[in-house]
Length: 612
Image (cartoon, rainbow, N blue to C red):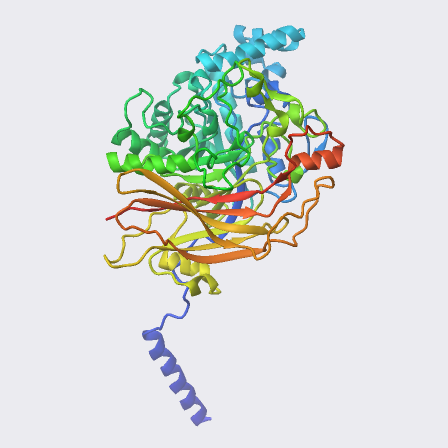
């Protein structure tokens, strides 16, 4: 027994000696890389949005939008039951700041609003004969174009904003579902879409301290940024803005001049980069990655293209030559490089997300469960062959209802499902857009990657340890004789969706003359491609494509003296479009020109290279 105790003492002494000088064992200690892929929609309108309300969404309020996004079955305004195949992880109910929440309150005969003469006038018109109702709707919509509100009540605005923020807090459940507070600033001078969704990181107590600014108080983006700066200074909160539908701005969203028409200078560039780190590049009113006239060598450029005009009350004023280059994300990213070369700051250094812009309270972005832009075009309504937007300029500018796009969603790589973590992901641009499917995509760039990194079991950790993720800047080139940057691209199909056909890297750069260039590289293409779609049955099979694609790619045309950006595009195999599902499920007869097949996709946020 004495020998046993002696032996135990020796062992304990050895352990104590080792503990005094420990060797690190866990390779993951101290690392907090974003491991959660969270799916959300940052752009949904409820009955509290004036336009949604007059188009038939009269009873699904922000709470109903949250319940639906959380996975609950709700009854649509058309009395149909609707549910997502999988819940979302986060949602922004982005009701328009202009007339926010007024119409539901008037329909409920709210005493405060009924005591207001302007409120009573709107109520009488809405509840009177149809002609009066149409006239007051035209007056409400028309006031947006001229920035002259027909109703203003400060107390009502405060009460409604408090209700909206309180609802967001009620449905916010950290770790399970995030309800982000937000609104839409709806500037449209002359019908040119300059809309922004504004997103808060904060709770109701903080966000409620300032009523959202509307375009009635200033229709320039600079006016919105001034409000945002004031909000952060006064409350200590955090806020950002997301432009959307640049394709309907008639050349104004990504212009090279500020709102006064002066060339963009450093101060404007800094403010825009500060407050607008993201752009919504795909949604119901068209895809905004690029345009076939801007990217003629890109065989996938013409995707769900809306390029007829703006949002003028006359029903779309047509585009003029030169407008397109200021309306699409890829062209704007190239313009940003040029402005940075001139001013020293890139105002268009943005990440990319998708969202729906649904005005039904229903965040449905998938082709097989598409609920339309508005209640008037929900399933079962005349939503394929009817005119959706009518132009007085000419029939060729009319938008037919089948042109609505079943798109899209925002994907965020975050450390947790909380307001703070999702907002952080947005701010650092570690987010990406999809046109509806939930494919998993990683994109890293750096100087020290090798082929084996993408094949390693912990390839994601290699991506962070050796380089930077999507949305970031490449670190300085390690040496003058260093090679080209390398990129890890990893994509996994939607578990309930289609296989992947190909992964591409899109590069934009400034040549030696300062001209912006672009090129699309096929990084990896599935061994077997083609279409398996049977449009008459709205079906397809995954007998082509691949479930997973991963690749290491190094820029073969790298010039260390040229500024550049890189982003990944992941394209699915062909699948049935929502119009095919309408025909198969509802017996809808489609116009001959109606597309019934689609190739959905994802766009990552870029990674930038700046010469030292």
